[in-house]
Image (cartoon, rainbow, N blue to C red; front, side):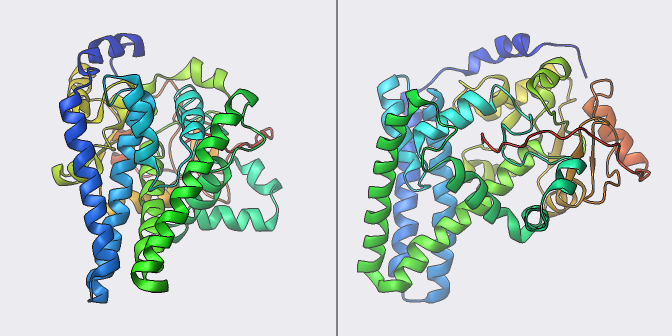
Length: 375
């Protein structure tokens, strides 16, 4: 991979970090209207199949709104700080996310320590961590890193644990704002479920809330997983190890999606450019990602979005050997080559396609306390 620093890349991409209120208002209105329309279908359509389809689409629209909220929380969507703060909260209400906690988890921890164990979603355990965990926890890890368990992982380990209520890890100076945001989210939840019940009884609660919220959790879980989990993407057991080893552009996977999905998801998979410059608004992100590819000579970690990609990553990325710098299975067998700093990601990907990995026992590790924090 070309020798170019994150600072230089950020400077090159700064031309895209310019908010457009016209584009922002249009996108926000589109997302709100689509969410309202799909939610109405989930509550009012007579045909149950069409009703469930509308419920699934409503869940996808929760995701689209959350991306708007994400940009607002970064201060990049609108030109005015006040508008960003107001609509960060509004856009994240359907996902029932506490914006104060989101900004703490995502902006302050995730972006400062990407792919560092304990600071991010889907932080992989080491073999030693896994073996020292109880049977219940080991079973949970196996379930979470399977297709049926992904949505449950985000619901339990991320949303309930860190993005709804202030907890022990919430700094004192954020607590008052976090409790205020929780009250806002709780009020919206009561309003939402009450509307669903009034419109169509318990069936309305199922199709108007439970199904859309479950779809949202699954989509979010898969999205975050693929953005930072891949046989050629490294992880670290400390922030010092991360700082010494890699740039932000080497720690994210550019998952190439069809143009229609980019439109539907508000370009959430154009993730490498976002990590280089978080102030780039979503409506400029695809162009910024293309420019980043040019700057790095097409050597960014890159895969086309397919079910096969997801299943392959789930199969191979179970645990991580932080000493040997490679992914391994639950029994410690290597499932990928070393992702150490001396082996550029693009070369790793080419080598992996050419030759199968020889499976070998993973090296032993010193135990590292596991904290599950940022997005």
